[in-house]
Image 1 (cartoon, helix red, strand yellow):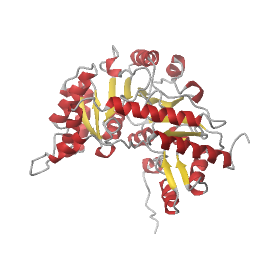
Image 2 (cartoon, helix red, strand yellow):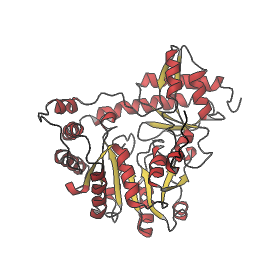
Image 3 (cartoon, helix red, strand yellow):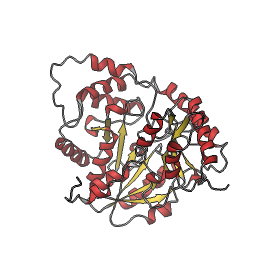
Length: 402
């Protein structure tokens, strides 16, 4: 029986995840005996390093008790050493442990904005930014980036024109989810100049820091003059194949802001104890996993991109980071096409699941012909998944350019 009781506005506005909303169709396809290649979600298949499990098994306390709201000192100190290895000197007071990168982003948005205030973002962006902003009553001000430009930032003039008296922050993701774009030094310089001119926070989602295949990336924590305005939002999920542990952190040298995060953390008590113990062991194990992991993802990136370029009408640029490709497809509606691939199409009892592009935008109508592809399968599986995608596009009734 349906309830007649009202819901809050935020409950009504909260969007469904474009990454997960097709799961019922994918499950139905599997029940019909169809093998589904999952390019829809950024779940790495590379094994979690054994140090994590070893540290958890070695835990000898008889009670798993509440930890400090800031995080366990053993984990915080390991993160200080990790950032120090990147050339970013920090003190433990500059690090606040969160339940995944999601809580880091949510806390940061709510700490720098009053309800109704604004954060500038560049779309397409990580889809859950929409939901986090709705929970805080915050307005995202989206600025478009284009597939033809490799989804790099718009001009300095365009960004500055979006600043209003209600703007409190600029949110970037570098390397980017969903586009794989790595911001150039000149683009970071633009963000720095605008933030300094207008007194804005720079919230930098740096979860994919290690996933850079050409060139290099730079943390906003290293940008001169932004010591009180730079806020890094981070997570161990991707670099250590640790998505289910929900271990993240916020890093800032702004003591007043860090005090606010601590009070937010006290309201939710603490993060998970055993996951912090295991994660500290991973950080202390160093970067020995990163080079072979990045080589593997580079092979996957290259295989995925090469196959995409064989499909007539696809528009994208080879990304330099993360493990996603955002592509414009020759279809009338990527949401309908993604569903059709699961419900109506297969090639040799196999099909491909993608994330439709519209969910990565805040502007209605944008991303309608785009999709995010996560190359989190072995290279040959990525090739096969894109081959199936191409055959699906060829057979799709709503294909553009027949």
